[in-house]
Length: 147
Image (cartoon, rainbow, N blue to C red; front, side):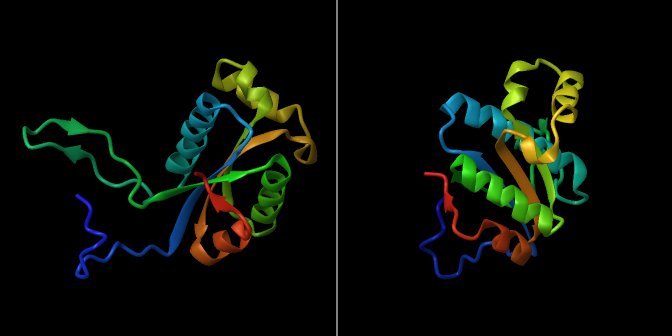
């Protein structure tokens, strides 16, 4: 139900922000894959970021989801590296996905692929950040939402 036109509707306000930044040159299937992987890191690591299980009107239970919106941004490879560096400087919680991970098939190989590359040489294709809203906004300065 769209309540955005209703003057009495006010979306929840959060002190934190969750964002995904994707390299805009990726094919759609890779963007979706990267998004799924990087947000799983946020869900696993951040206390209180996931709400309670959902239950439908028949009593069937479903897995919980994030308690707040997730914003998705697009970036060139250069912009993505700049956002990564800004997030690192601000000590923001971050999950990463590198180009090398498209060639692996399991978590152990993923970890080995990341461990084999120094930070400055990671070929980033996506990151997810969670942190205090103002700090995240400063790291994202200049980026546009994915369209």
